[in-house]
Image (cartoon, rainbow, N blue to C red; front, side, top):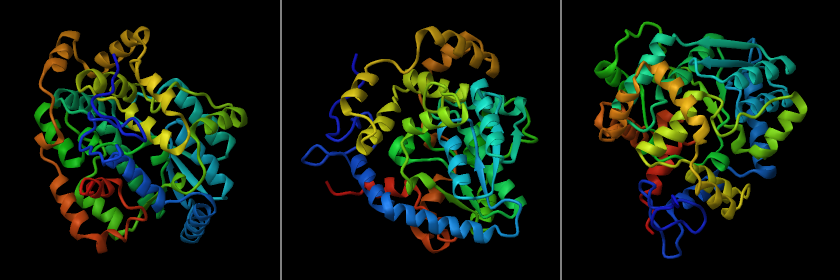
Length: 387
């Protein structure tokens, strides 16, 4: 069974299963247009390298009297591992931070050790209380939202901001890359600190005493008052994920873990089973489309890949047992959740409407904490394109 649904973009795999998609008279989607807009906004080559070097100089200048001049969250995956290499190559002084939600694979943890030791980078590990994070994962699963890995995402952002504030560091380097990952629809991935509390209040069983949430006031404090900025080096530098993996393996003895974000077992479950089976969301369409546009893979190869399920049937039982045990849910309870009506981020209280107003009317304020225009803004504009 082909997972392509209805009309497909001429330039990628974006199809009518993608929320908000539209096509022009030539069969080109607004998602492809957004990709092209991002490419124009962040060119690579000599122009991109020069812009990155300007940013590096600012990072060094701001961090002169500090122990570190930047913070890098590291998962053991390709992007963050290669980012450590880049930071050292440009003589930056990063603090590597690993936020452990208890689901990191053994390969990921070994990669973190290998990269930080060989590059002589200080590593700080933040272990999230297991009872609390497991209860949050369970609450999100019961909420029937698509992106139930949100508790980890929020904790990562919150902890990185807190550590940057503690160290007086103004720059957090992130390994995101729209050319190799694409831009996910808001309907699939949106979440925030207010939503997290509302979901946990409804479904949670464990009191949150240590979990590092990120509320609106804290975000304002970090971004606007303290001017801590998020930087995406791969927006500017030549970066090919497959070549980076080969390089890391040959140079450092780093190991590959099998797929995008598969370094975390729970994230892998969300990507390959939860989204795919419950919501019929195949995020590979977004990732592969971006990689087709960047020339990393061919459309023929991508089509061949998505004609297969994203998970291995032989590994599924082990993965499911791990998740059900971690979340304290029986197979019968899980089947009931799978059969329950799907929900949207709009079904729970959140900061979404407030963020929309801030993005629309608060650009003079946002400039203090943003070097890169959020992809959510590009998405909002994308849906207003006249096709």
